[in-house]
Image 1 (cartoon, rainbow, N blue to C red):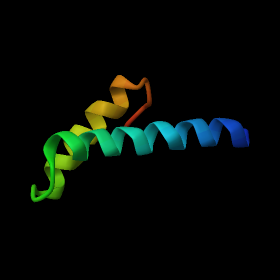
Image 2 (image 1 turned 120 degrees about the vertical axis):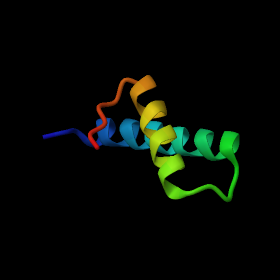
Image 3 (image 1 turned 180 degrees about the vertical axis):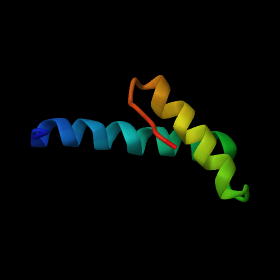
Image 4 (image 1 turned 60 degrees about the vertical axis):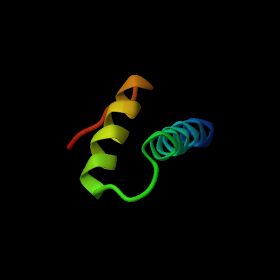
Amino acid sequence: MIQEDELNRISNVVIGCAIEVHRILGPGLLESAYQQCLAWELRQAQLEVTE
């Protein structure tokens, strides 16, 4: 089972990546564009992403 500290770390990484994607792309794009960019950012942060 994943420890609470590890879940907090992963949550912070995911939120940070999502904010970064939105900061760069801005509002108004299709959801699929955000999904692809977020997946890329998460992989760059060494997280496993399945689609």
